[in-house]
Image 1 (cartoon, rainbow, N blue to C red):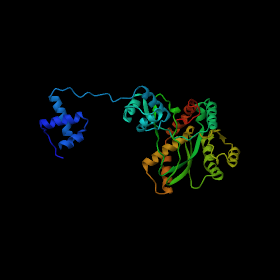
Image 2 (cartoon, one colour):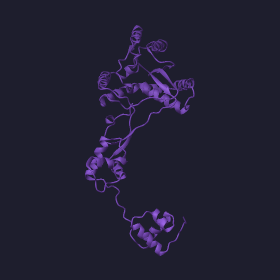
Image 3 (cartoon, rainbow, N blue to C red):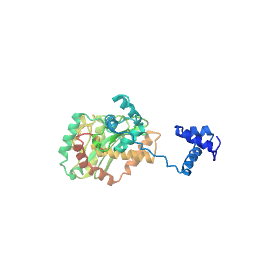
Image 4 (spheres, one colour):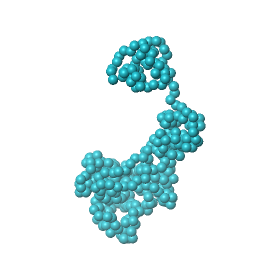
Length: 343
């Protein structure tokens, strides 16, 4: 297509005629064998020279009244709905609508109405029974001073993978809706070279770390406690409280008897409460740092070396910060009525 700079009066008239009849700049350019940008420039330059008023800019927002209320209701009830599907959902709800606004108009309206798109927290589903247990625990232990939490040893296992296939989920919500009332992005783990680790820490600092090469059972867990936890408790020099979750191997009679025989005081942890355990945040930091520093490992041994390297680089300030967060976590559990908290 030729790049033209000048048009005859007849061609200018044709441009105005086609434009007034709804033709696009592209179609007008095709008709005149000129670039769309050249046609558009000639159109506005002619208007300017003729002293014509600039083209009136109409408001793009065409959503109001009943449609506005219905659109809000639809998004509240279906927070994952794409903007493109809102007009169709309205028709499905109330029938055909004359001059239905575009989905872009609904998007602009919802943004102006303080709706936003947020990423859902990745949290496990919690049963009603366990929600009640979380609330009970939070009420009881929120009365403990920070000094109590200074002498708790936090422990847990985690699976470290070479890569993760977990997906973020975004939903639309009004800014008036509290985070605690939003759903969560439930996770299913999978994929790649992977190794399970057991570790512990307290406000006093990092404890030992172990790579678990085989599946964890009560006997292998008891060996870890005997070889790693008991020496750590003795080295602390002060009475410590041991925290472990409710994994089956943790609650096996073999393990409970072992802890009792060795005088280990334990924290009665509520089920389904990883968000209350500060070591979960430590694991997340270790995984993020490993990924940033090393990238995907080729073998399990390489993955183990990477995790141990990051573990040994953790500073004492991070341990203190995570331990000191426990009181706030309990307050959040009570604020969220036992539901998952944003930790």
